[in-house]
Length: 328
Ligand code: SAM
Ligand code: SF4
Image (cartoon, rainbow, N blue to C red; front, side, top):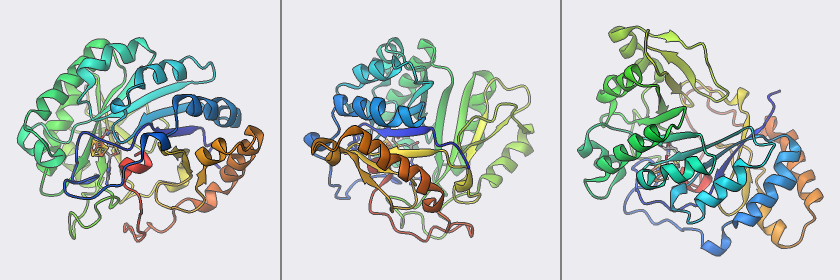
């Protein structure tokens, strides 16, 4: 059984982008009222009194857009200096990163994943919505993160059939000259299941074949702890990873849980059963050892809860929360 030691923490469910595959423009989203989000103090209490004693040592801050949270730098500082924290990282859309990268780095953050679905500002706009200068701003955020010294610096690409599929080689090429790590993610039918019709995702193997045909591709020596299968173009400084949750189910090696901004602990991304409302328990005075017992029990149940219905490469379940609400 995998040691579950990795917690993805959603700091906020709101976002300044409206990605087609996550919270598309025009859809009604019921955002969590600020009072219903875990405060910094509550989050730190849960980390110190519940998660860390149960063996969690790796944490990723995500959202929604984590950089929209006003206390994000202070939170990073507080978590990074907990002695048991072995790894602290963040996933961001990068829009506010050119301003915040130095403060985040000085607060102790060292690893960042930035979502970049296209190198073409017009296609980027089509994916994320909003004004046409967004690509330029995100690219400036990536450059700022590079300049400050985030390492590894990873770029997340959700591959959308008919939209950015043709850019796979250009995006993969970013790993050649710089120590940037590109992560191609298969689109999941969470949040906007009906969007891409029949061919909802491009299997990772198709992408690997394109890259192989162009430059060759070898398995990387460093595989990491996550769900990505990591490869390298021969001689490249960075790597190329594939997160293939649709075509190559990796639920049996799942090592993570997710904590939503309103304090729901979720053992499996694709199965909604077993969730614990830690915020309500905390606010109603449930003693911390009792909360720890409840989470420990959930850890024991997790192998049973982990999603098992996708062996066929289909996603049969329906989801009441989007990736931005769960903390993708
Ligand atoms: N706002 C930040 C960002 O976009 O990087 C962090 C939150 S976002 C929910 C985290 C990651 O989930 C992003 O890399 C995004 O591309 C990915 N994501 C969101 N919806 C998805 C979906 N339906 N299928 C696959 N990946 C998705
Ligand atoms: Fe916002 Fe990230 Fe969702 Fe895009 S994927 S809408 S940037 S939370």
